[in-house]
Structure formats: C-alpha cells, structure tokens
Length: 355
Length: 200
Image 1 (cartoon, one colour):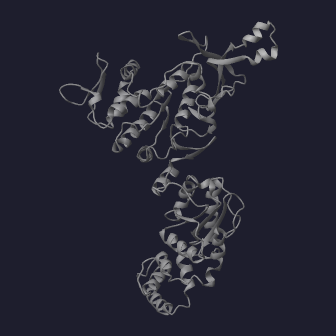
Image 2 (image 1 turned 180 degrees about the vertical axis):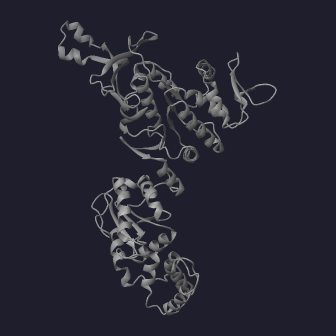
C-alpha cells in the first residue's frame, strides 16, 4: 500500500509530493491540474520494470502515435534534458521505490557540405553539427526493501526499431505489486478475462457477495462461452449483467479490477447517475476492504464527492481510511490540500467547495 | 456552494446570530473588506476550523479572527481554539485578545469580554444597561426567575425580552444588531472593537 509519492518532471507536473495516502484516495481539482498525471505516476511506479507502461498511459489518453516527438510528451515542458523521477514509500510490505525515466538518445550527424568538402572537420564545428533525437526511453528502477540498506537496481527500456518497438525486459526481477488503470474508455474492456481470473481464483462468491448488497436479488454470477457475464436474479433464465440497472455493470467492472493490488480509476463518476454514486462508492469501499486493495480515483463531480463522504459515513466512518486531495496548480507550483473524512464532512455540511 | 475565500481578512464565529451581529458591528466601525464564516456552534470549531483552513484561497488570508463564547470558562474556551489551530500547524496567539505574528496572523476573542463567563447576549445586554426599556426588562426577568419552571438560560430570555421591547420585533440578537438595537457606541464594546480593528 502506498503511503506517499513524489513526482518530478512527468508531463505537466514539475514537482509534487503527496503524503498520508489511505486505502481509498480521491483526487479533485480544476481541469489540467495534474490529477490524471498523478494516477499515471502511480501506475508507472507500480510497474516500474515494465517498459510498455509509458506507451499504455499514452493510449489511455487515446494517443497511440509513436514517433520521435511522442517520446518527449512524457517530459515536463517537453524538456528531455530533465529526467522524470517518481518515488514512493509503501507499507505492508515496507519498501521504497524510485523510478527515473530518461530519454534514449540517438545521434544524427548533420554536417555542412562545405566542411566535408574541405576534408577538415573542426571538432567544435562538427559537434555543433550533430543533433540528437529521442528514439525511446530508459527506465532505471531502484527498490529498497524493508531493512535492506542496498537497493536493488533494474534497468529496462523501450526503443523504436524500424517500424516496430523493442522492449528491454528484466531478466531476474519479478514484480509482485499489481496495478490496474481504469478510465472511461477502458472500464468495460476485458471484463470477461478479468472475471475468468476471478473464477480461477475461486473468488466469484466474494464478488457476488459485494454485488448482492447493491442488488439483493443477485444470487450468482457465471461466465458464458460468449464472454458475457450472466447473473442469477431468481428468474427462469440467467440475465446478462450488462442489462442490469443502476450502473451495476460498471460497478462490476470496477470490482473486478479491485482484485489487484493498486487500482487507479480516472473519472470514477463517469457513467453513473447522480443517484447511483453512493452505490458505486459502497461497492468500492466494500471490495477495497474485502480484497485488500488500495484505490486512487479522480473526479470532477461534487455529487461524486458527496457520495464518497456519505457512503463512508454509513459504512466505515471510524477507520480513517479515506482521503480527498485537492490538487491546486498555479503555473509550475503544485499544492496538495488533504481532507480526512471529518474535515470533508464538515466542509460539505457548510456547503464549502472542496474541489 | 461557495467556491473560494475572496477576502484577506476572515472572521470565524459560532452561529448565524454572531454572523449578523459582526456584520452589523464591522459595518458600524466601517470595516468592509472581510468575510464572516459561521461554524454552526461551539462544538463545531474542531471540525470547521480545519475545513475553513483547507478552503481554496485560505493561503492568501492575512488575518483570521476567531470569536467564541466563554460559557463557563474563558481560558478553557481559549485553549480549545488554540489547540485546534496548533493541530493545523497555524500559529495561535499566546493570549486572549492578542494576535499572533504568523501568516495568517490569528486572534481569538472570547465572549462576552475575554476573562468573563458568558456569551454574546451578555455583551449585547451590557451595551444597553442605560436604556429605559431595561427597567421593564429587569422587572420581567426578576419575575420569571422566580417561576417554578424558570427559563434554562435567563440571559437569553432577558435579551429576547429587550428585543421584544423594541419598536419592531426581531427574534435574535444578531437581527437586533442589524436593526441597531444594541448600542455600538457603548464602552462595553471597547475591547471587542480594539480586537476587530485588526481586520482593518
């Protein structure tokens, strides 16, 4: 479970530190304040040796172009001379993760024709005639476990090779932390596969239990050969879960993601009516607890924030396991304002804006 | 939903009555560029002051004045607010009615008069002690105090009785302040006026 994260030089974020993470963390803030980038930073640090993840976070933003310019998009102000540094502290197990992302540079010699003709190449001039291009990324990961003093270091990378992409994968390191990134475009993708994984781990009952608290008639879930998840609601035949009301399909999509370690949900309110927001949070709080996962989500919606607070009031209240973070950005300066549940409740009670 | 704190001077008070009272008093002393926030009762300061300190715009606030009732113990009330502020890593004043030097600079005024026991109503009544209507109010208060089931809060009852004696009936001391029924020129308000002068 993450306790803190520091992000330097990733996309719009020059430097930002967030502390005191809890089991369920909700980010709010104005457009372009860096909420999604924080999720991306957490995602990269959760799979720090997976060199494919930078491309994935671009594709989550519906940007699938890979060329010389696309690599620079990860760097703050497109400045590839400043590395991206993401570090975070975790507990249970206690470890410190640190990921540095550097550009992989290729050199392109551009020499003046006149210089070549002279057959004398002045070192200074020839250097100024070289430009470098970025053809990929280098990922340098450092992991310090519990009482260990020397960090384990793993270097991976991704480089454009001709029409394709070449990944450098770690030979001996196996990442134990799991992370899932959900956004409005990816939420329902792969739901059958995810459900199948749950089925194999014999955890279908737990999913049903969480869902049945939202839809009491729901008794059982099963995966059809057609890849559709069906539910038993006491009728003569099973019903595709897709046609169930109150956003239960989307709730199920999120729950299925929450059987992994870290779940990152961008625009968590998306697809839920105002009246269903509490159902969504009920499901998230219950499944986060049931499957012991840590959730990081973003939202624009005040109804979603209110539901976040009221659902927690009903279900947990005394455990102090949620935080709302407002990300404030003024030019290059980022400020995080953190609300525990009591302060959030007090703010909403007074109708004081928290976003 | 109110979005951000716009002013650099902020007053935090217990309830709506105090909001009305201070809006009237600050207008009287010609202080205009401030915002008053009610916390919804003295028990709410512990949650509402941290909430106020997290509002967008609070980092630009230069002066924060907190006013609460002494009830039975002015020092305990003062310490309670100090502890809430310290928890928020805000610099509280060392003494009642003084302002700290931090940013924001913070002052705490304990009603009715810093070292006394009591509340807003006590202070309001002190300002009108020489008002002729107080003779009637005093007689009425003496009478109801003798009842077998007398009011739990005789000061509040007395303040209501005074308001009932005014030309146009209002039902709260805050609205009374808006109507000009309390004497803002009274010497009894000297300390409070000196305190809110920091919001100038």
